[in-house]
Amino acid sequence: MSALTPTPDNTDNTVPEPVETTSSSAELIMTPDSIASLDRMIYWAKFLSILGFIGVGFMLIGAISIAFVGNNLMGPGAAGISLIYLVLAVIYFTPMYYLYKFSSHGRRGITQKSQHQTDQGLIYLAAHYKFIGVLAIVLLSLYVLIFIGLFAAGIGMASGFGV
Image (cartoon, rainbow, N blue to C red; front, side, top):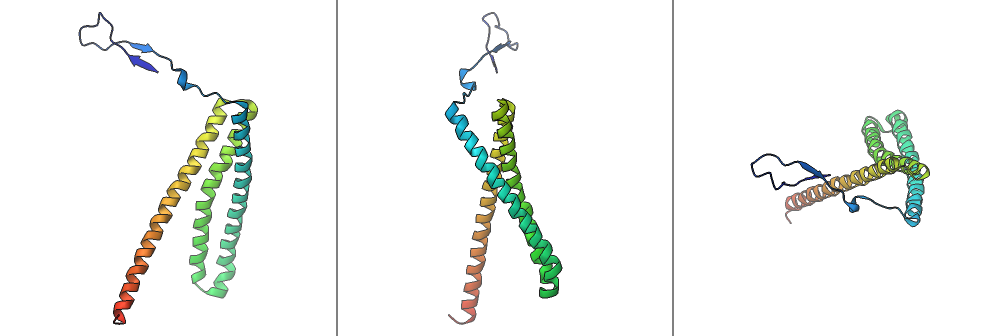
């Protein structure tokens, strides 16, 4: 980083020259214990992401099955259910992809002692948690809207019965 510092002979309003500064707080040292903890995180992240991919596969199989077989059994409503399953599979795939990328980049970073790979892995982990956080906010908002709608419908029904 550079900091601008005025020079004593710079009394007019010209732009001062940049001066290079270094900060010792810019470095992060990973101890063997922190590397071992990161390694365990990477192991479990890969395991959970693979389970998530398997879950996405089951959701896609379910969506395709409902689309073809359910149409005969349930009628035209099966297409809507199939579409919901497809949307949920796409939504569920995204955080699993980020988690898998964290595990693969993080593993490469540890084995190759590469700061860049480790950084990339942590960027994917941050993206994973950001996605989960936004999804949680959206779902909580949806729950509130559903609750308000059900409450209003209940009041409407109660007023219709003369209560």
